Picture (cartoon, helix red, strand yellow):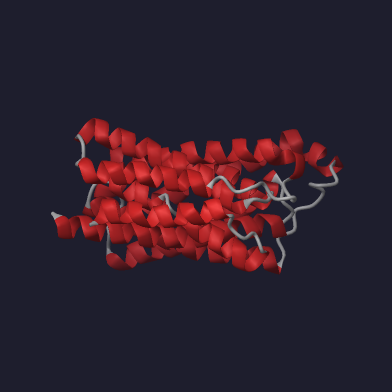
Length: 302
């Protein structure tokens, strides 16, 4: 059991590392594309179209059977939640304070599946529960960084977007776990069907109802899917898809609460990348949060 838990934990931590890089890349892609809702939707769609093509090709080469019934429904539902959440999240990241936005969403994303798993499957034990509590403290400390000047007066709106993303990610974790019996590749591919569908409808809605308003706004005057934005979107496709596959493998190897809590430490890598690339250096409180996260990992995984 201990070796299984360690494998589960290692997969979840690897997923967290890749997700953090994918989130940074997605936020930069939205910023390069103009920072608007349409830009966020187009970056998500471009990333998910790319990963969908690759996933379907892999599934076909492996000869995996396409899921049906409840497994297909859970995969598509995961994609719908993921598409909505990523749109909110990348928009929040593009508006500054990347670390804080990532950490707020991470706290909620960890809490929802952990609470559900404990309710359905019982307690994982005293030490993992203590680790969950320490992880929540760590994520909260990491979230306590000051809003960047770029966020300006939109800090409240950015916080709301990050919270909505966190709730959606929590449901995404649960739905992806439920789709897991279909394998590793097809659940992710069907999730992309859901995300592409909902993002297409949202983009159509924005064009029909908000296109003129965005065109009249100086801050949202153009969506520029240039070379830089496309490059960031491709990086997001690679990192996010790889992270999702590792997370799905982690849920198949052990408990969902362990996988979701450890995977939700992804803000740490987002913060490190934001510090190196943008100069958004973590505060002393955030550094303490990262050290606390190490303690949480030890309590949960060992």
